Structures are given as C-alpha cells and as structure tokens.
Image (tube, rainbow, N blue to C red; front, side, top):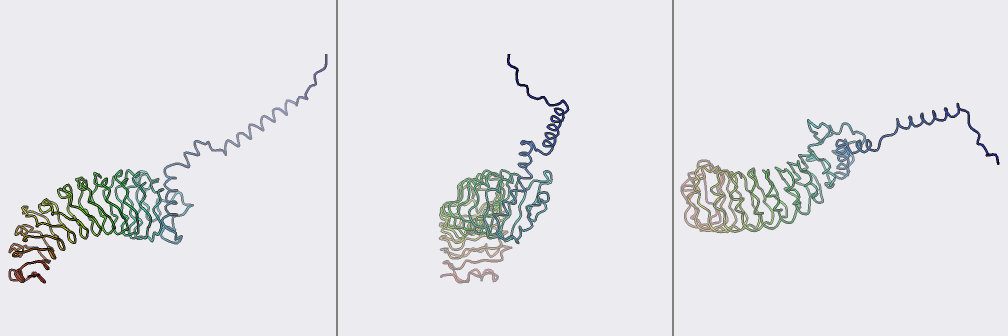
Length: 364
C-alpha cells in the first residue's frame, strides 16, 4: 500500500494566531464600515434632501456666485436654516417651509428639484429676472399655500397641476405667460387671491372661477381675455376686488356685481361690454371704486347709482350714455373723482348740480 503524502501541519500556536488576526481585521473593518441600509437612510434623510435641494436651487436660480445666494455654502449642511431667504419649520427644525427671495437678482430658471422641499408652504420670488416656464412639478407640493412669481420674465402656460396644491394666493402678475387660464384653478377650495395681470393670456375666464368661498380678489387686467364674466364669479359672495381692465371681454354686465354685499372695487374699463348699467337695489353696498370707461355701454345712467353711498371714484367715460345726469350722483357723500366725459350727456349739467364735479369734454 502506497504511503499517502502528508501535508505539514502548522503548529497549534500558528493556527491560533491566524484566527486571531482574521478576527481583529474583521472587527476593524466592521468598525469603519457603514451598513448599506444605514448609509441610504443617512443620505436620503429629509433634512439632507432639503439641503441638497437648496444647492440645486442655487445652481439654477442664479449664475452670479457673488449674488444674494452666495452665502448658500455647500459645506454648511447644518446651518442651512439660517441662510438668507430660507425659513425652516418650528417643529421639524431642519425642514424648509418657506423661500423668500424677492428682489434678489435671480436670473435663472425655477428647477423641478424645488418639489423635493416637500414641506414647502411659501414661494416668494417676485421682482427678479427669472425666465423659462413654471415647473408643472409644483403641483406635487401638496402643502403649498402661497405662490408669488410676479414681475419676472416667465413664459409658457400656467400649469393646471397647481390645482393639486393648498394654494390660497397665486400672484403671477407682469410676466410673459400665454395660453388660457386653467379651469382647474377655479377648483382650488382655499383660493383667496388670484393675480394674473399684465401677461398675454387668452381665452375665456374659467366658468369655475368663483367657486371658492374664500375668494377675495381676482385681478386679470391687461391681458387678451374674451367672452363674458362667468355667473359663478359674478355671484361670489366673498369677492371684494374684481379687476378686469384692458381685455377683450364682452357681453352684458351681470346685475349681481352691482348688488354684491362684498365688492369694494369693480374695474371693468377698456373692454367690449355692452348693454346698460344694471340697477342698484342694495342700499348698503360697500363699493368704493367703479370703473366702466371705454366700453360700448348704452342707455341712461341709472339714478340708482346714488345707492352706492360709499363710492369714492366713478369712471363712466367713453361710452354711449344719453339722457340727463342723475341728481343722485351729485349727492354721493364720499365721491372724490368722477369722469363721464365722451358720452352724449348735457354739458355742464352736473357742474350746476354740484360745483365740485364736472362732466368735462362731453359730446353734445
């Protein structure tokens, strides 16, 4: 029988030393290693996400390293809640809830990454030079209650996804926005202020606008809107300000607007409204400012305008009014400004009734 070749067996002490070395190395490596799940949790924690998102915003909102966002430093992951324009929650102290960057020299675009600030309730970016489109992803910010992007150079359409938010205030005035007003905005239950003035918006006013029982102010002036004033908007019981000046709106003026118990400012001038001025039956109207100048209104000026006892300003110029000027207008106790020029009214009639006012430049 052949002898088997035996492998040399190391001494017992050598074996023990080898095992001890392996255990020591494993222990050392374990002390430095981070479990994958723990690493993922650390890198994706909400506070770290907010920090990284702020850096993303800095990269896209401004190309001026020495500008307002210059103090937003990449190596300051702990103190970002103290950065200028950043407000963090009082309860979730490392979570961003508001961005106030008005008049900050921003000259870039609003990136979609802003939606990673999932607790954001306020975006205030007016008076900058922002361009590009409003990200549709803003609709993912379900807590967003305030959006002010006015006085920028934003273009494109208004995202209909904004209806998925908690928005109470939308101010997009003085941009380059085009297209129609999304009907979905009218479905925002908490909407209080809507300002879309001085853009290039077209189409009709959404028939749903005015559905919110919180709606206080609607300003759509200086656009190219067409069609009538929706009945839901005219009958909105909470509305205090309606400014539709300088559009191509038409049709008759809804009587509900002249008998509102909440309206304080009604500006419908420089449109294509026709028909007559509705009668005023509400003697307790809070209306203070009424502008109907430069339309196609006809008929006589109703004496019931004298029921607007709070009226301070009345502009009826450049229409087709005829007949006499109601004495009741001269008796309005708070009236400070009146313009009924360029109509077909008797010259100087009102000045005889009350020397404080004049129907200057009337066509006879």
